Amino acid sequence: MNGLGFRIDISKNPTVICAGLDDLITMIEKHNAKILGAATDMLKNGRVPFRGLSELYTVNSFFYAVAPAMAGALAGYRVQDSYFLSHTSLFGKHRSFHIIFEFVVSVGDQFGVVTFEHVIACPNEGKVFLVNEMEYALMNDNLRQKLTARGKSYQKYATGSNYLQYMG
Image (cartoon, rainbow, N blue to C red):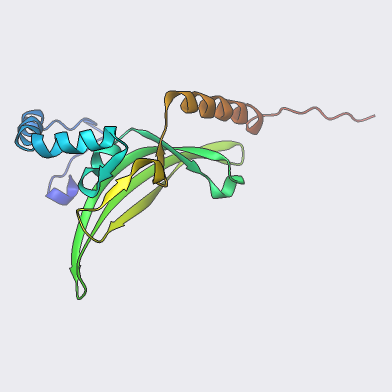
């Protein structure tokens, strides 16, 4: 909001309410129903156009990928934000879709949340991506439960004293 010229003291009021925002979103969705419907149908069939990536990578959705730092084990990621970006250079117009993911890491015997940005470049807006070939795949409930159980097990052994020392 600071970028729009608003100065909000979140210590007094942590919730920002924009009157009429829900109505505006509903109006925009109705106006673009044909485009949104086509993107949703393609997504159900395992394909997503560049302009439909925002329907796949929605805020608070969970994805997984092979984590290079974890010897090829799967890791879970939550979408914190996503947006399109377009700019023009000497070589023409460049479009990209940016996804901000977050995940939990251990630092000593504590945990922290790390965010990173993944960029999908697109030379033309007509490009269609196959969902099963995307680097970050949508996580199903079964895998989410498995990764949650693995995380709880890791938390148990990574924090606190879990070993006894015998001195004889």
